[in-house]
Image 1 (cartoon, chains in turn orange, yellow):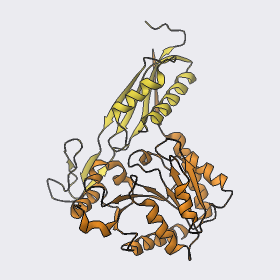
Image 2 (spheres, chains in turn blue, red):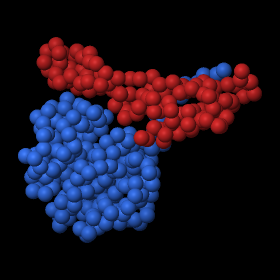
Image 3 (cartoon, rainbow over the protein chains, first blue to last red):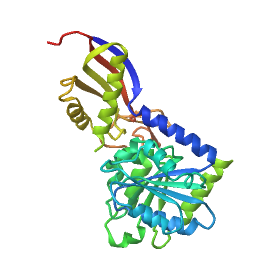
Image 4 (tube, each protein chain N blue to C red):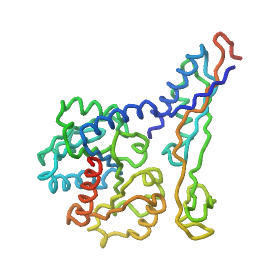
Amino acid sequence: MTQIDVKQKVLAANMEAAAALRAGFAASRTLVVNLISSPGSGKTTFLERTVADLKGRLRLGGIEGDIATERDADRLRRHGIPARQILTGGSCHLDARQVRQALDDEDGALSALDILFIENVGNLICPTNYDLGEDFKVVLLSVTEGDDKPFKYPAIFSKAALAVLTKVDLLPHVDFDLPAVRDQIRTLNPEGRLLETSAKTGAGMESWYELLSSALAKKRA
Amino acid sequence: MHETGIAAEIYAISRRAADAHGGGRLDSVKVVVGELSAIEPDLLAFAWEAITSGGPDAGSRLDVEWRPARQTCAGCGEVAERAAGTWLRLCPRCGGALRIEGGDELDVRDVTFEEAGERHP
């Protein structure tokens, strides 16, 4: 019997592909945001509102990860921006290789942008591990999902630079302990930001746009 | 559940490492899994069994070394003790803010395999 030390990251292959993507995004000076949440948190609606409000002043594009259907990419294309759907066929997350393929398939349409939004497959667990070459991860949580989620899914809440609460216009109608959620997020990620938003009323969206602008300016400094 | 994909990566890395040393059948593989790696050790072991069954490495073991994340205090340096799965809001000694360190490990540590031609019992 022989034992050898390996000491290798399990996801080394993905990390390598992600590093190549990151180098490409640095060269094209594109800000890349990886959005992660459970299904139904309002990711696509949040993005639609963002695109509607920003498309006049920024070149935007989207990559949409789903198990099935072209629906989400269609929703973004209706706003007049390039979007590519990745169908994972049952897989619960996007990986860097799929993002590379999507960029190649779009033949440059997603390569000369100010901001590329990658909407991951709806899932709070699996996408956490897979670096997609993004500048930062955003985790979204809707107020209808329950106020215990950050501590139930500590991995993503500790890694996302920004947590976005969505559907805050529904707060009067649901039992959602907002201070407790703020507290959980702060505990898991003391340096992270938290925004409280409604894509419907527009509440909090300006802060999100300011955050994007300043991240983009920083990337291009 | 993405443990199957993770187990497949671990298997590919392990097999490659054994092959590079002229190795035969895998005996055991040790992985380090952190509390914030979003991996469930039981599911990972189950996925390993599913992936290796019926092949040359059937019956090999995946040993998981679990690494908790640590909460440390920026003020007094205390590494706060806590029960698994719970998180402390503030430092129990000085009331300062806590930082989370580590816990995101997901590494293949070492691989044990039979010499080529070695007969397993």
